Length: 368
Image (cartoon, rainbow, N blue to C red; front, side, top):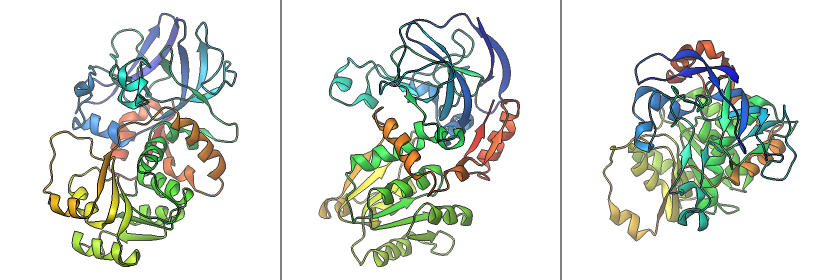
């Protein structure tokens, strides 16, 4: 029996309840993770508000939210001895893992589209009132199912840096891979929260000649510059979409961006971003996860300029290994630690969500 706490989430608008539960056993192939740190991602805040309905993904309430995490192995189930790169695992080994799980046998998995698995399972979608209980990152433990992809965290990468790898960093890496960002291209990043800052850093690492970050919060724009942005556009100073599109064209020699990444999470940003694209530009849509929202769109501007829009949900699990390599190589050049500078205990999770909702922190974190 394994005893620990969870922050039970019963329904939007209600406070989290700290509850002590007991896991009967760790089955063959499973791994019990002792949670070291779990960030509060934007999707967690949306679920907390009820604007991102986990039930629509097959989830049930009550549940345990939290997915952007790093942990240490507490118990290895029978048959598990190495991570997905073949490195040996043992009690205490720090690991990260995709928070979603594919069957590896459906038509999408076999076609290499594992993030679109027809039998996909995910953290935050299991019930918190029945075993295994530890179904999300806001708890003392998290149970990895049999067959899950898992990677060892390099010793040189701290928990505060590693926690963002399995969601925000891997997501934008995958998005930029999907549109094949090339050396010397111009990139615009709409939004300088955690996803946007990672996007800036990854775009520069892939050889972008010019990365432009857009946001309305001065502290985030300063961080964007620290993460490698060549230029920033302050929404408070350049106040209309038309003027922002003109500014982007001026910063790109009149051509417009080759790639625009949307991580604002509001549909109004999409039409604006499309206007910033040049001929054959590629638009990476990541931020809009709330169902039912729309925007006005003139398709002729899309057609005549040969633009492409790519929707990005989750990522191929193998990207997470590359994300760890990225963090290991760049952690001393980029201020990753500033992304999750504020941490809260599990008992203070309601206070942490209030802070995250108020956007005072780029990424608040729970450290049980």
